[in-house]
Image (cartoon, rainbow, N blue to C red; front, top):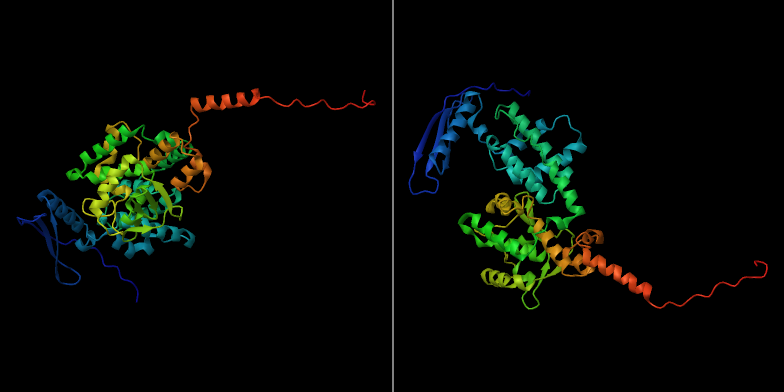
Length: 405
């Protein structure tokens, strides 16, 4: 049977807002209408914290209804809309292109934005998601494919009349990779200068967070002192810490995945051991007491016990705002790892040991943290002078034959 498209019909809505005291979200907005196709009475409702939010939701539904958009479709989450219309959104593409697009949709777009109604996906939300993917270590092509499939789905929503403009057409994110290239050449330039700078940053982040949650500061200090990735900090379990030798065995990282946060192997796919310096031991001891004796209990969690990601840390502490006020405009969560590795290199940790702590696969990556400062260069020159000044056996001149004379 051929598909028959139903013409959009503008339907009148009956909106109302009910105030219900004693609730966390006391304002319930509701719309009711008669379905012109199925001859039934239908309704939608949602609760909000303020009356303005409730009225804004109603205004958006009424505007969509005037354009012939079914109110139930207008509030459909992005994940559901994308699954229903993905074949249409990706029409004309070859399989070799659709495969990475669908992977980007499944692994990045849906976990980041899939819960939002299509109408609520904004330029800002897409921006934050893209920068979150970059901070999580996604490559340039991965981000490009993920953004491309989102652009196509939102373009289909625009053609369907759900939105007026495509919010996924964002720009500027490529500059993050140019910054990353500089980082690869000189990661030391991204490190905090000293312990005082680290503690000031941690205190400022806690102060800016909701209810001044001290755990955010503990995550920041622990990450810098162990030169670990935020995902690895999130994955620490009680059983990974040896409070006798003060050694942390890094076995996993917690990262975003379809359906939420999930544990997986470390980036190098191998466990490694990291020493816990004296400055961070009291912090770790407190966390061990709070976590209890269960070896699988997480050492670091959010204020409600949730798992931490770099994006969660950024949003909960207003990271971007705080670092700008402190004069670290370009500081990211991953730069805490650069800080720890830089401090260890300056403290004289041997290169092969630093590589093990960092979990680097290539020795060349670790070498970028070594700083050939003036003292080191002077010592190198003095070593060469000592070598040249040492007594050397004088080699006898070669014998010369009579014919050569």
